[in-house]
Length: 438
Image (cartoon, rainbow, N blue to C red; front, side, top):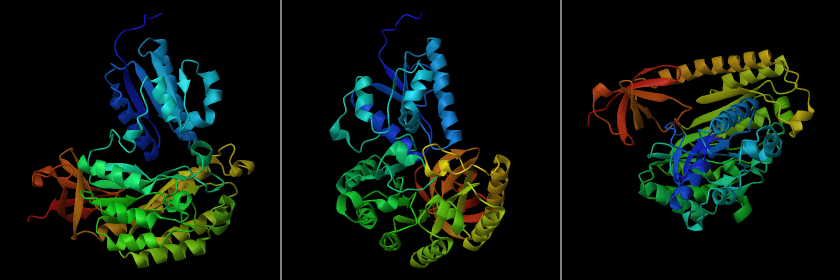
């Protein structure tokens, strides 16, 4: 057995899953740093003795990735490479008791709202005065900005309310203060995230208050872009679009997961909307904010999905011509309403249908990008790699949307700065550009 070391604690935080987990890890790290606990994110140097794994439990692939990571560090503990392994996040919230029996090497399991207890275990104090402060894991010029926790929606396929609890909005003043802190540290883009942005404020102010939040954040000096992720279509607060149209620093961009194009599937999904209402909503959004880019996410192979429903969805995609679209195959999640339905679409068929949707969208994306060749636009420079600067327009979110590639030989650009460029070529998911000489 390895002798217990006397070296100071150094914590390695491993983050899996979505941007909401990234946000939570950043908050955890800021709290640890404030208590003088050494901490790093996704460290590979091997000089840490404590590991905190922030897990995802959304769908089967994500759960398996989290379990594999826990098992890797359980093995590392057995080999004496780390002293303590702690697990937090969605998988731990949902399956902690069962996993505890299966993986005894884990020292403690924490849920999604157990930050004070996790900090106490790590011999750190939860400092209320640090609310809103984070140790960013993204490049300093952009930050994910969580405005609420949990979800009150009853979508039949989704286990998130089981893991994240009911909807809880963060107060307006607290969010504005957080935005000011980020801006003071060089953040220029806020990417607003939540399980559902459109519910913001209902619990605190008795009304959907996304429009006021956007106006208040837009007034924060130093914030050049504000981007909206994860909006629910039913009951969408249209007044938020008026603020988007009026304010130059609110990106004309909306991530609105619609999940399916067939009304009959949407009914089984308990989405509270139909194909026709969705089309009217998208038309209204595009009319209110000309030039807006809409990103959506769809599910292939929901229980009972027929070939006719799939084909209906494909025709709908063709009509809608979304600027951005992602797709994943249905995952049968226990304790959801959809789990009571037979998972009767074979996995191979789910994959074929997802591929068909992405292939169709690929053609749409190529056509939309080709129309941008010759235009001048403003981009934010994210990084330099492989002889190119990688940048984004206001219509592109990090990791999931278009890259704008600018040859480094074309002129010096600073990471985190904005630049005017002219689009010279376009592919399905990439644009090429050169700087516009001022």
